[in-house]
Length: 390
Image 1: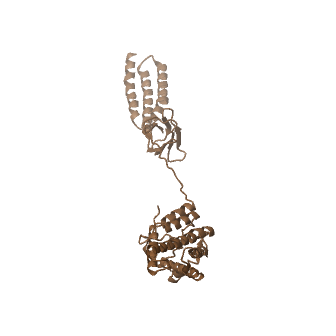
Image 2 (image 1 turned 30 degrees about the vertical axis):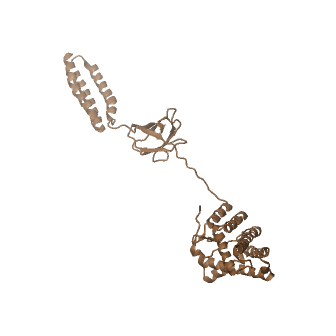
Image 3 (image 1 turned 45 degrees about the vertical axis):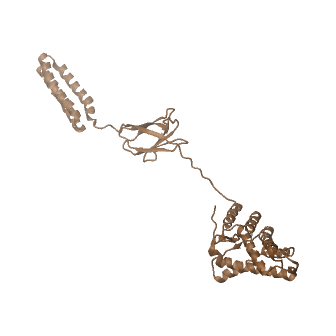
């Protein structure tokens, strides 16, 4: 019996070595090795039975049973490929914080794969922690972390089979506030700005040239307030006052009107000229334009043929632009000249008061307006310093 056991051990051990060595070989070879071992075991047991008297048929049956068990149990295990895991998934996790390292609970975490269906979304818990499982390996994922009041945090990653990736520095910064302000101006506000620009217009940078519009296509009508403001601006400008004094000196030298000479006569002429100009500009440039809804300014053409520009300038004392944008008879300018000439009879010497002189003064004033418009159209525009928006 002892001899039989030794024989059995010596014969079985090489077979088990053959089986265990097959774990490191490919699956088809492992199956082949297992079958060989099973058949060898059966032969060993059969040989044992023949070498050991008395064990008989029972030993042979036990040997064959063990061989069958080995073939059924061991061979399938050896047939499995243990060299690579089968389709293992991965996971990603992290903690959402703000710029002060305080946790951000309730943040939305979205992991998106290349396929639309490969989308995973969770929210961070009370400690800012999140975890997403069941992600595929070898796939490029994009993760976006968002929360109200913060700018989105994004990154991209790839996962290995079975990997649990920890995203560090998932830190949300405060979103920048973007405020959109729609700025709109009323027609009156725009017209006011245009008048302010016109009040800066001066010939050679000195002589007022306020009543000229150089951008006629975009000019808006003036309100009554602006018409009076512009008239007062012209009448009280220091250069205007200096011009009245200069003209009074010329009238003094020419002894017109029939005031006396000397300082008193100069003062009378200065007052008469100032009254003429003030009444004309206020009546023809503010009062009547406000009542009749007409624009007292000259609208510079600047382009076109010389003939068209001349006709435009010469018609200005008789045709003006209405506040409605249409051209109409210039009742304001004509009326201003008539009223101003009529008022002058109240302070001119009696020798200068008559119907003929009244009509003559009106005609002279109208002619001066025609000449002034021509000068504006062809000369002064070149030497006028334009106003700038403020």
